[in-house]
Length: 209
Image (cartoon, rainbow, N blue to C red; front, side, top):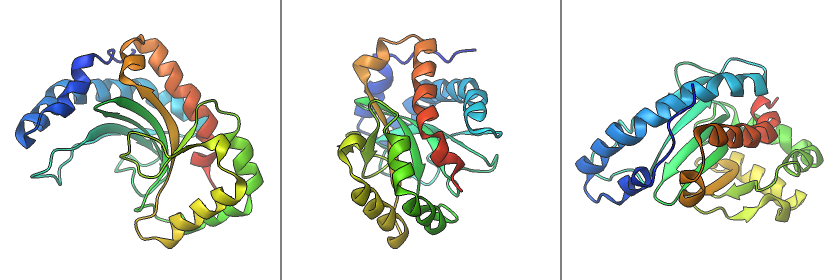
């Protein structure tokens, strides 16, 4: 079953200034849609990567004061959590939805992952060149990408991979940004197709080494 469509009111949740109010609105309005989206996309992503994939909807359990600027459903290979692995994410924030691939700071072997793709820089560039609209994001929570992948050369990609392993908080984030106007104009089926088309391009990075 396709997830419900995103509505303009879903994005306005992130304009609520107080912590309790925004958290309540996220829980009541956005999280159920992300849960349904996770159920709808998990099997398709599993087929893309050739392995079982589990959906994890953000709970923001560690937050007590500052309301989150975005919320998400992530997809990874472990039913207990996703942060220790390369993962996909559908993130919703004030102005957009982002379809992301991430290797984050808590990845269990980000040095090994970075070294593997650093040695295969030409192949990495080739993978990324297959996708229209794929962007590099400096941070997983950024609404705006830093650059189009087509404008990032092999040497820059290698430098980004080195930063991933060199910095304790290093992360490697690629994906596509859809504006709120684009998303609210999509049917659920069209959105799921767009998500899977994006993740299909990035699937070799998820499968990794």
